[in-house]
Image 1: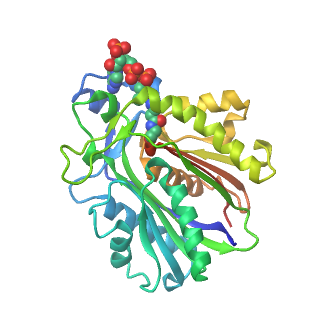
Image 2 (image 1 turned 30 degrees about the horizontal axis):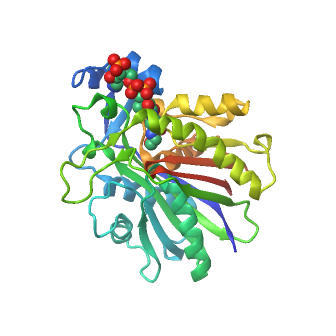
Length: 313
Ligand code: UT7
């Protein structure tokens, strides 16, 4: 079975920047509490013209432009999201329509909450292998601001909107592997269609405990499949929920903190978008060299977890 390598990245950031001080005007909170507990200073919320779809489409357009490939060669479109504009059509089908992407290919959404982008990569890999497709478009996009209870200070200060996308190529020689799993649980809960208010509810302490276990577990499980240590990895990109979760992991693993990328200070927690947003931001800053080994780790609602080893061409 062929693995995947990243050919290009793209991202889309909403226009409304919301600082912790802005939120302190809405709920009883302050910058000091939010920053020391989470590492978050500000996040972006969509304005009235923006949505998960506009963000996903913009990020995908940029990833396609940056790839240099012909968009007609895209063999599969996967969006990871829990906040698509419609329950149906899927976000992937809407991006397909907006960008006039090929029609005779698999096009679907994946919902594995904050692990969704890594689940999406693995689904894309399966689809490309099954159909002998060459390139895949994988997007993580969220407009979480529309499902935030702005009276609940324990959740509304944590999340933000954004989208990231990658073009991947299926290749026999790719340095790629992944581990996926889930525990089952409602510790992060958003009601379904027609069910009461659709707000994010979260048992933060329980999720925190889950996350600090999940992170090293993903690495351990990948090491059962592939021979590597963290010294072999150039960048570790974790889901950006809380800087304390990443710091905890660095300490537990006695790892080099410089390898762990963090950008939750200016994006907050963007669920399925956080890992591709970080990839795109690092790419823009030329932080990722060709062939660098990347370790991606997701954890979140479900309770899902995922670890991926991948390189960028
Ligand atoms: O993306 C999916 C993965 N999600 C995560 O990984 C999130 C994991 N959980 C967390 O990151 C942390 O649990 C939180 C950042 C959500 C919360 O941090 P905490 O240290 O667990 O705080 P807490 O919920 O225990 O609250 C401590 C205190 C409480 O007051 P009392 O009961 O001690 O008087 C809260 O009412 O802080 C209070 N509090 C706040 N104060 C100011 C809660 N939210 C706020 C706030 N501003 N925004």
